[in-house]
Amino acid sequence: MTRKAVISQEYSAFVGELKARIQSARISAARAVNQNLILLYWNIGRGIVERQEKLGWGQSVVEMLSRDLKKAFPAVRGFSADNLWRMRQFFAVYGRAEILEQLVPELNAERHSLTARL
Image (cartoon, rainbow, N blue to C red):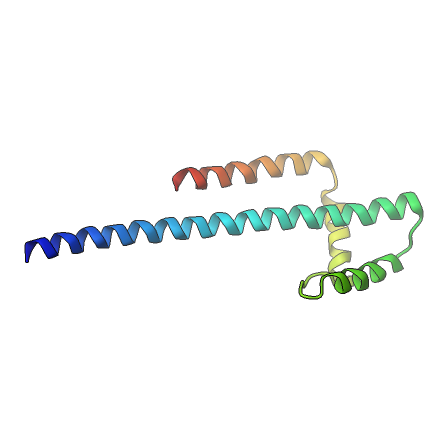
């Protein structure tokens, strides 16, 4: 009877450790995905702004991009014209490279500290 109680306590502790590791890994993965999406949106916004300035593209390019991206990635949501305008605005507000350079190391440091705990 004592042996079963000890195994049960050890097992419960082991399950608890695994749950904590799984939860930590899930949070770390979600943060990595969010970081990559933020960088993607910033880059899409940058591409729109730069081409409008350098090539003289008008506002209708956003509508065309939306149609073409939705066609290329039918299962992916987020490429509506409204969202592309938001990406453009995101770059316009946070377009200075030094802001992005500060943000990325902070996100990476946070991700590495979570990974180290695993």
